[in-house]
Length: 286
Image 1 (cartoon, helix red, strand yellow):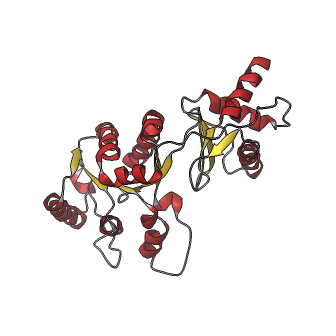
Image 2 (cartoon, one colour):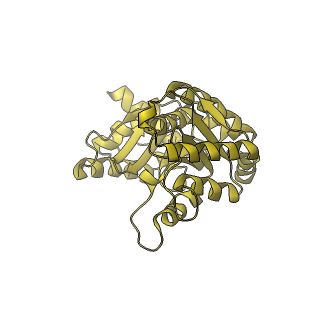
Image 3 (cartoon, rainbow, N blue to C red):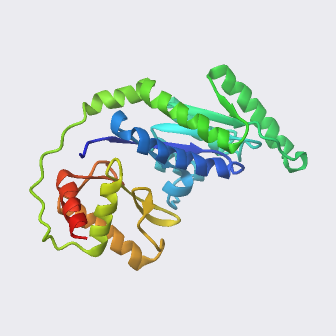
């Protein structure tokens, strides 16, 4: 059964020494969506300067990132280990400026500091001293979290996301503004005779297997991802022909009322009642 949900952008902010944690943060957000988005009526969309910014020459680099990414974020996850980052021109680092701008807008942020061992010779003493100073400042202003290794980071983040989305006033206001989950209007009875492409049929069948009937369409520097039931349908990212086939498949399903766009940027879709009924018919014919 389809349902409505609000898509909230979650910015992952960090210096360059926590790449594994950045990837785990994205994975944890997707896992949270699979488990909680229907009940919470919220989808958490991971974004960052590396995936959601584009070249521009109308401001300093961090100013452009602020406009393209930070201002669009609803929640910020900050991650640190041994570095604070490069000064941005307005703050001690780009990451610090992102956090300050985000908090100044009245939006929630969760900051994580790694206590994992590190080789002394690999540490920039100036960067480490700046990080310790920033960490102490954060302790005075709020509550931070520490972790011992990437696996522990992913585990604690999962729990913190549940707590923040359920209890923080920012997300409570989002749910109040969006109202209760609306039951979508009934769609016309599906026709198995619909002239769908093979890709559209395969995508519908895979999406119908997903517990939430969700399809995610996201374009990053790594190419296009069309994900259904935890499976990326695009077998050759960055191949123009392959990407066009799967983008077309998404468009076909939406145009035929078999799938509905439930986000506001064309990235999150749900199988409709008509879509489920057609998927059942197609599965019986297979």
